[in-house]
Image (cartoon, rainbow, N blue to C red; front, side):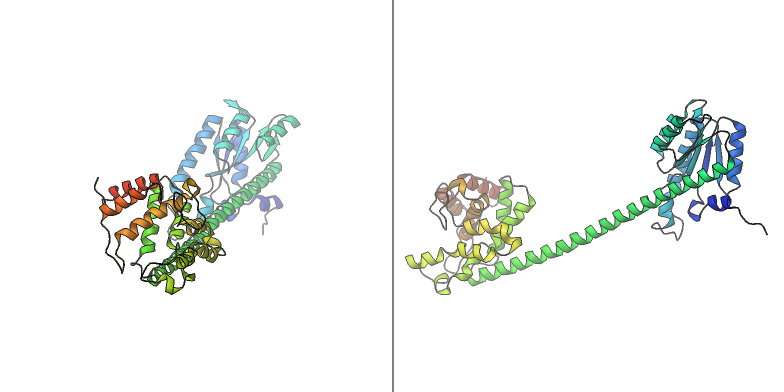
Length: 389
């Protein structure tokens, strides 16, 4: 019973190499035929070329063929397994070529092959036994080099090394591809989780805002309306950053959260407040600031909560800021909040008409409100069709 030699076992193609072919580019027809015949004995499909032009044409045709067939998976195949592995490579896995080509420099051919087909291993043949030539072959990316006349045992060992290098390269490529897909999948899962968490935050804030409105006997959805309008107004004022708009929306929803700390006898008093009661009422922005200060994801919203009662002329509270010292989000909110309060019914009065509310905003521009913000808000309402042009 015949047994395979050590060299035969060494270079016998593995299962994943069954689609691999070897291109022999050699000017000498006898040597070219000998190389092809020797490799064919080991199960490789060999193709021959006598010059660089023909060799490159063969590689291009094979790559185009691989591109066409890899787009059509076999029935029942798993693209994450062997098909995915095969789709990473060119039809040819190994090229053997001479340093001296009849139609050009073998080094230029080597450079073009490796640039166009980086998965291909290349063994160079040279007729001169010089270390300089060997070093240049390896520096340019060749896997091995052999000196003519070529010893067939040396050829088999060189082919083994070339295939091992190629196999490791493809395995690493496949690993990187799988890793990238895994990272993409995990990133997608994380974004979904963060989205659900953000949705939970938003729903919680909306529920809390509704509860605050109900406690003060405001009209339904007051906080949601002012939050939405405040974000639109900021966009009209040139704020495009999504994070800033989200922060403003959160602050607008919770602007009156400090009223939790205001006694019902003051908050729900049907008549006007006296001086002592007003001093208590004016504490609600500071109380709200203290309530939210320890909640990390709400901390960016604190400036609106703290300063939403400031006035453009400095007569507001709690800190008496004036003009551009007041954060833009708070200046925008003041206009939106005033408009909403005037144009919606309260238990103690009927809503004001849009025309009268407009006149009131214009009258208070420069004292209560930033004039530029008022102008932009009214233009926004005209665009929405709430006001006539």
